[in-house]
Image 1 (cartoon, one colour):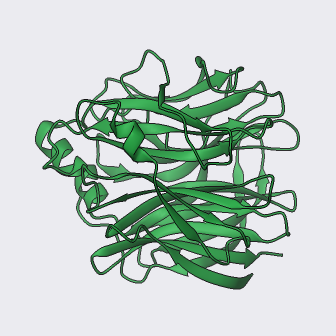
Image 2 (image 1 turned 90 degrees about the vertical axis):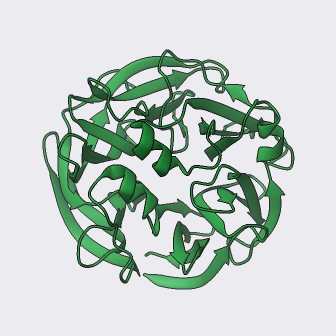
Image 3 (image 1 turned 180 degrees about the vertical axis):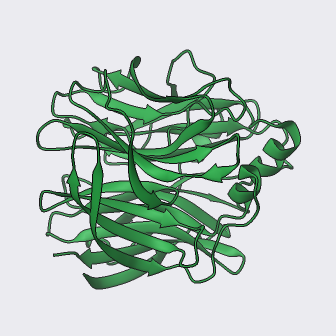
Length: 359
């Protein structure tokens, strides 16, 4: 691995910039969406964007997207979304937002006090000019109370969009991971499958990839809500567009927000590790991902997290104490890769944007 350049990206008007996601546009530019606010989990947090014309070697901050979104609602609405480029060249950004009926409280404080998160709505915005202008928000209609749609919608070879998410409920009688599908560019969505189900274990921070064979692969952070315990990341796969799924396969890798990378026909798991003695961002290549087991191979420490371990036993406390996370790697047209994640330095949070040569 060779690090070609490192950049820090942030909203100059706020101290907190987190949760990045990026796409490369047909004109070669990179567009990054992320969340900024006056504090971590603050009620004034919203979606902003930055653009790069040199494959991530420099970024120009372009400001807020969330102002027109905020105008739709009767109270503060903190919205997070990741971008997806459609074959038509249109951009969509699908995600979720919390209605901040107690704007003076952080999300974790709210969950700790009321034993649930604020009301959640899933929303999609779109752009036909590469992100220079965005539509007003479109509500994603489904029968659930709100979904943790934290990864980008996946554009599949069959022309359909799919996303994978779990309901945002800490005390539900059953935890589920659900598959949704759209055949009209994200205007309408249907629930088509269930990739995970458990009475106690939640499937969070789901990320997906489609393999050359057409198989859809998901990785998720498994958390035992009953015992307040992190479990290893798990993988599931589907060969029928997300209608039916394999049994969950334990990766043997303990971490939280993870992502997938296809590198030279090998599958890589990009992972946030916060719980052990060596926190950081890791990339683990799989030697095999067979029908019922996962075998891990070479592992690379991309970024050393130092002493940025999570603290507290309860999940609400851990959410409030996060110091880094949500890594992703974007393959670029010039053969390099863009690594994105966020970290806290002192009392400020910024996005790390690294241009890498992995092979």
